[in-house]
Length: 183
Image (cartoon, rainbow, N blue to C red):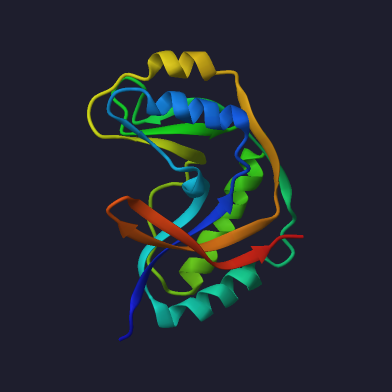
């Protein structure tokens, strides 16, 4: 068996000045490590360690499953946290317009991964953009209130990306393995 690579399938996010400002503010909260801009994305499926020789079949299945899928508009709105704002582990920006289309796209991607007989995270799809991770206790309820009605970004989802993630001391480094255009 050859090398394995850590993979996920995602949608690129258009980062606005409003998002940059909010992420900077979120990062100023004690115990919150903000996401780097080059890591901002929406995960459709997380595969984790995958044998590299299985990548061509996965790409083929993704292309086949997504052929005929139209691009669509998406808007990012509000700030929240998993599991909640008083005891967060992850801080996120939410999806507003385009949620249904995004969920359908995630279902198709997950189907292509399953067709490839590859393991993937089996948690239900929860559309969000991770913008911070907690390294200790914090309360982001004031930030959630401040940004509840803020629309951070509006853009067109025009492709799906198979991404490689390499973990390192300064965080993960993501590189595009394959970019699959939508109609």
